[in-house]
Image (tube, rainbow, N blue to C red; front, side, top):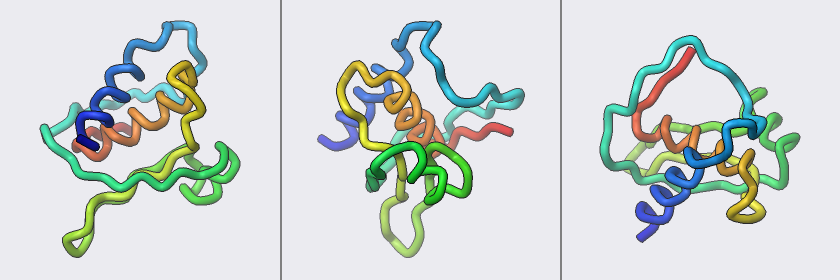
Length: 102
């Protein structure tokens, strides 16, 4: 059920309006290599807290270790219309699926 919810959020993220401000333009993109990911989400209060927790990024993903799920750190999404934070969540979830960028 959690995976279905995460995939739904991912789908919502990519349906955001084209003029929505989003962080980062990347020259290099390697598509996802996995079709399934198990992640634990750690919500932080806002982007400022995320920058501190994620070494400068607005969100981050830490790969699984020792049999534990991966850890996705992102600012808490405020609503289904919160395009920026949904974008951050979807971006980090793509990393959980194996996607990479420069």
